Image (cartoon, rainbow, N blue to C red; front, side):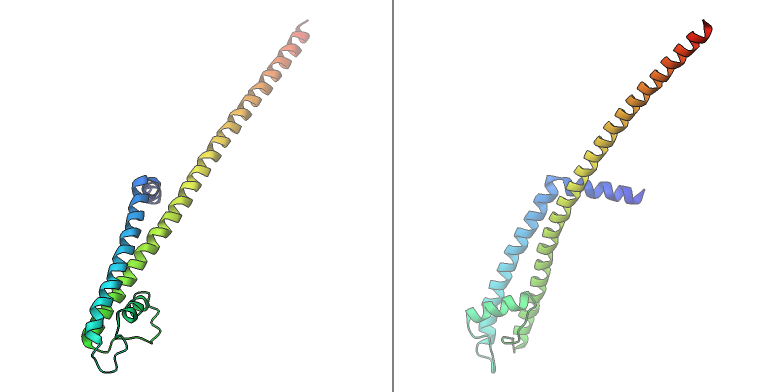
Length: 162
């Protein structure tokens, strides 16, 4: 009962236009938030890091590259914050990047799964219709055969009575 209820609930949610629009909006908002976090983190880290000893993040273009590396967790090691505040900014950029990329990935994956579920539902309905048509055709043929046997039995009975 629980699995059938869950299946019905998921098919209703994934099959609705509202759900698809929700995921598209989530992906778009996630992308916008990621861009804002990347640019904001880049703008914040330059003044914090540029005058620090052994700093590698000293310009906005380098900071943008650092933010992309950090948000995507690539981290080549060529650029990294050396100050405590820079590391806090790095942690925020990492968490925001990981979270937003996860939301976007989940939204895209759910869209694919929803499309597949819709296709499977459509295939199941088509198969059900085909099966019903075949069952009805078989029932008609069985009635026709039964009627023929009844007719033959009547003919034999009539012949025996003569």
